[in-house]
Every structure is written in structure tokens, then in C-alpha cells.
Image: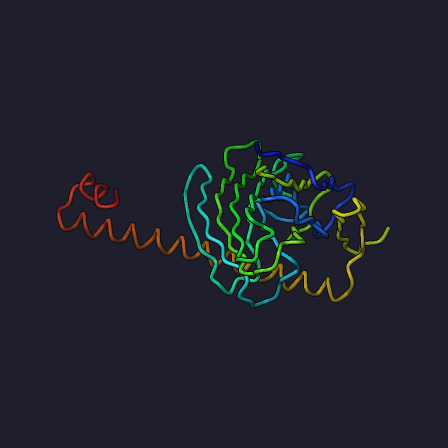
Length: 173
Length: 77
């Protein structure tokens, strides 16, 4: 029977530009990263965030790809970031201009994170706005690094106080 | 009160959380990344808008050829 164990968490008591989970143990089968966040930036309803694996980041690199489908109640879209993307691109952090005290929900599942092959990620993202328009994304990401994932960072905006970040380990036995 | 942006690092092996000020280099990197992310988002939106415009244009041309709305809709199912 699979078990679901909290590895570490953080609820921001003041704004921060990134939250990094380091020294992730390799003793689990899969990882789950759950985020409830709001940005201090942004004039629209959502702003972008990004996920960086093992600190691998740069203006151009070959580590990441990401594909998504998105809907906001009015229109639907899809997109692909090329194999030159410098990070796995997440996109539904509730922006500063959205309804007060609303926070987005993001969950990412990373199977076989400690293996020696490329790592995949599946994500569900929903902004919250308590208004007519909101955004819902489904995402698939690829990290081509072949070493175990020992570090996950969420960055790309300034996360507001009260944003929460939870990292879970899944064991299949 | 300092305006220096901070980052949070959670060490999963110890459970210790540190709140650290960004270095000047990290602030510069953050700005570069923010601009790149915004460019990426705009590019994705522009691509989606271009596809939608092309689809609308195609539908208009198909209608001009005599296809009904139901027939046009059936083409994309």
C-alpha cells in the first residue's frame, strides 16, 4: 500500500522570491509538490512561476521541456516550451491584482525522482480569483537530468506572505 | 526595514529553514529570468492568438465555398 509522507513544508511569514527544498532524501518512490501561492506582482489575474530542478537553470539550456493545456472559462489554449527552455514553466500563481486573499493551487507529481533516467512531471494548476474568470492548466514537464532529484525550487515571481509549499514523498511499498 | 528580496531554503535533511537575502548577482539573475518568463508567456499567447485567427479565417473561407456551419464544425471533430 502506498504511503504519503510529508518531507518538509514552509508557509511564508513574509514575501520571498523563491522557495527551495534542498537535500531531498532518495528514499521514496515518487515526489509530490503542493503549492498554494499568491504573488505580490502582476496586474492581471495570474502570473508565471517556474520550477527548477537540482539548481539547473540558465538563459538557454537543454534540461527542460513543458507542454500544457489551459482554459479560463472563456477560451482554451495549449502550448509547448521548446527543448531550450531554461526551466519547467508553471503559470498559474494568483496575481496581486486578483481578488484579495485568494491563492492559487498547484500540484506536481514527479515519479521515479531518484532514478538515473530523465524525469517527468505532471502538474495541475488552478488560479483562484473568486470572480468570473480564472485559469486552469494541466501540464506535462520533462527534466533531462539523469541524476537523482535532490533539490526543487519554485521561483519566478515574488510569493506573498501566507503562500505555502509542501513536499511529500510517496512510497509504493 | 530592508527592501532586499529574500529566498527561502528548506533543508529536508535537518528540517531547518533559512530566509536569506539575495545577492546582487541573484537579483540580476532574477530580473533576467523574469523578463525571459514574460517573453515566453507572451510568445505562447501570440501563438495561440495566431492559431485562433487562422482558424477563424479558414472558417470564413469555407463558408464562402458553401459549407454550412455544421459541416465546418464537423471538420474539427
